Length: 124
Image (cartoon, rainbow, N blue to C red):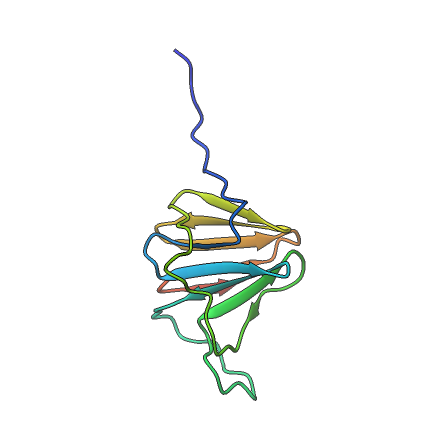
């Protein structure tokens, strides 16, 4: 009997996606991935000086370099974004993300990244 490996579906052709819950949405613009969590319960990081907009629920990640928690007045959330199912992976320009019931994990070529869920935002 042949053994089959179950591999995540790679949704690399998509420029945007959302997790099945609809609570996390991501989109790529000019080589940078931005992900927004719509509703969260974690403590926001300290607000930077000069940020009078939304804070703590959005991050950006390029193919290299550190993750930025961003000050923003807009969102990448769109109900039309394709769904990245739990257990599936997405690959973009120099970065990759994996969706799980526990949230989203994304990393870049430098090994930098983030884990995002309703209850947690961890930047590394």
